[in-house]
Image 1 (spheres, rainbow over the protein chains, first blue to last red):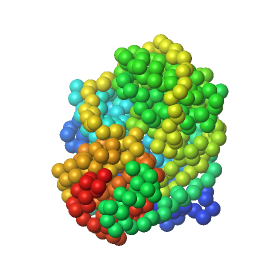
Image 2 (image 1 turned 180 degrees about the horizontal axis):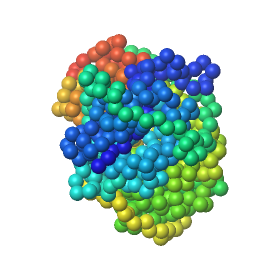
Image 3 (image 1 turned 90 degrees about the vertical axis):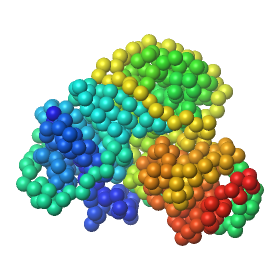
Image 4 (image 1 turned 120 degrees about the horizontal axis):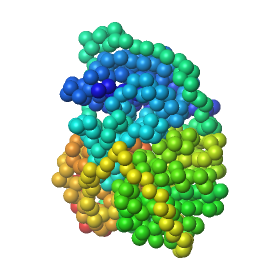
Length: 249
Length: 308
């Protein structure tokens, strides 16, 4: 079985986010970029399924300019077999990304597509579900356990108030939550090996997908800052303030 | 044009997210309809009909909808979508699960996690874990949005809308429900609670969370936790408040032994009053707390319980 893992190049999760002075976007100049953490978990899960003998090949795809080859190489170093960069200079919305990925699914015919549940930049949490809808596949979102058996995949999902387990026919789409696994570190020999793994480049325009979005960002602003209040001396003063000043108890 | 809202419920009770969603929807159009999809959920529909500002309740009551799986719920919503300018659901794990499917099947974008409605086509939403706030405008013919319920006040229940049965059945074909493991608690749910008391790594271990229970009982509070406490294995993940957990905005939030990582602040900084109890007076949580108390939580918590 083949597994397709789409990955996104995103701001590194340790970087402090700053909004540009003209309020048009977040300032990404000279910012450290990484593979989106949820996508990294998706790669790790695919590699584990291959190590268990369930998957035979892992294909990693990323959509963006040439810079995203760095994230594809990271995934190859973690254990993916080959990469595909869909080249575009535009930053696409989830629907356009899902449409491009649906074309890749049609070409590659994977048994599973594993994606991160959201990227830590746009925080949309949409692409996996949209891809599932466009390809008619069932979905197991926010996965914390994935088990493949008898041509089906059982996914335990993190939902409000607990866990839910669903059984899906394959091919299926899975999106990863944080507790699905802890990604490994790439070893130096594997990083060297990854450089020789195949990486195809195709132009986004060649997929015949309308890449224009109907959503326009009007402005991006820093959030309102909350001001710190006062320190209280003891429990008695705290309770008194909550009762008479804040009036919340 | 009208707005179609997807009701958040568990087949027995309507959840308060729905009331908040109605407030958000009433800023989009004057006609607000609610879809209640589930199994044996006519009580939920009756309750939804009472929410102020709701003109019609659509009830899709069928065994196939019992667990509200994304595959057939999205198909149901798409079939109903024709009459509506906007389709809205709460940004809960249910809404996040099926709504992007609705958007893709309608060939429109989804606007996720809306925290303010500027106009019928312009919305405000957090990006980069709340470190930036974007205002976006959609020119799609239908707007599909998920709403962060905690950002809106709940609509009251004085209405009497009609409940209409919609007998559209969408069988589940390639997915099936297996089991659910839901945390049982007498306490309010985190996302609906007026008061929340949360523990962090400073609690030391899972047993010490019992120190929060007496206080929670007296205040009618829900108990939460920081990601550090969850990752350390003190408590289960569904108690997590933060960017990767629940986003809450109660009247009173008490953070105990929580340092105040950005991750956690992203989930609770819209609370009306924040109290921080921490032995480290330099902890960043004090920069957002209305009332800070520096000291050992193991001394302070019993005193607080006694004082309430």
